[in-house]
Length: 300
Image 1 (cartoon, helix red, strand yellow):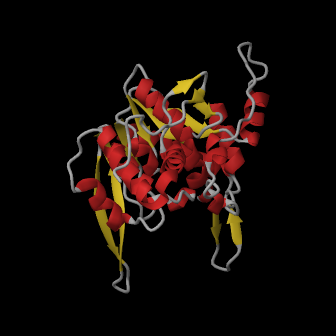
Image 2 (tube, one colour):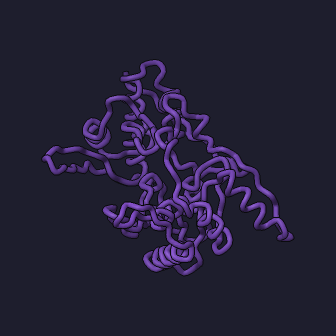
Image 3 (cartoon, helix red, strand yellow):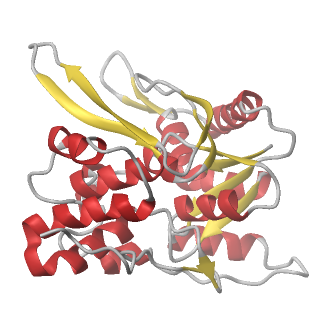
């Protein structure tokens, strides 16, 4: 089994371990040897947990500095072909809210770029241009000729069928190695805070989880979904009737969009789907954008 590892997550997670605040409140930056050792140990542990029988592939989303580093690093290779930076297509697709617009002030760890260079030099890296590493990982999983396992703590990837694994980090529990079916499944999860107040989220996999995100959106990526459709409203909408087919599932989603947007349901549903879908179909290296199935019409 070949591990497909989300390098985007590792650049932040491991990079953050390279900084801390001492007892006097002063910021301290650890040596890069320490940080690169943590990266190697994490990747080795991931490979062990998924019973890897082949070296891992590391996936990174293209950024200007990453592209420049790649072109500098491999320009003397006889088979080298320079790459150009292409922005994530989702930025242009998002019109209701800026895609990941809530992350503009997110500061990268001190060793973020150094970890990027280190991965390029020491691992087999795949760079996602014009899309995200998630999309390219999904492409390899769906269309690969060998058995693969997607390794990431990003819940969005779990709409892709096949094997998945997520390592633990802090209070985030592991997603144990398991196979995700295309239909998948969802559950309504209640969380009670220290004041006894309850909040609900939907967790799941496969197309069912994709459909739930189409309704509720994803606050992490600033994707709105349908206004005032939270987990408590979305869960029964999708589960009161058993899963029959992808078309049937999208029919329920389309009806929900029509109930809020009326005649504008189709462009709004198309936009949200393109922001949330893992685009594993590629033509000429570019993603084939998600579309509302042609036979799907809302029930008025």
